[in-house]
Image (cartoon, rainbow, N blue to C red; front, side, top):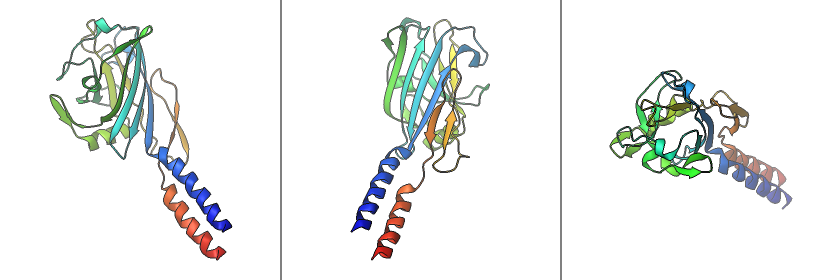
Length: 209
């Protein structure tokens, strides 16, 4: 009987941890120096993107200072001011995601803010579509960047690179990832902890009997 309660406790703990294991957190920053070619903009952006690799959905919370709502420029295939592109740091690439197509910036104190929930990391997005599996791999490798367009800087005012995910870390370890102007954030590497706990519980129960 005692082994049953021990196993139940282990299983519950593993399930609670596993509930967050499928979420990938990316903290990043945006500035004019990162644009190709660099701008002299004093605007700054900080963002947090959370990606669920089981559902292929992402949440985004982006806050930008030094830019007003009236400064934003309708650009790209959908006429929106913010896009995510495929490209390494220091290189320009093709648009793959359009967060601005699914939500609008709002005034947030002295900043403007864009928040999105449960948006697909690929597929049809208005006037274009992209491959979600390619986008996922590029995100893991740090080959996606986000760029804002304004009336003053029609070729891009500020830009930020999504940091690469630490595939080299062992399961259960913690890693720190930082983007330009963005603080580091710890990330849990997904691991099959739930299945391992079930196996261990079966062994313990059998030995107990």
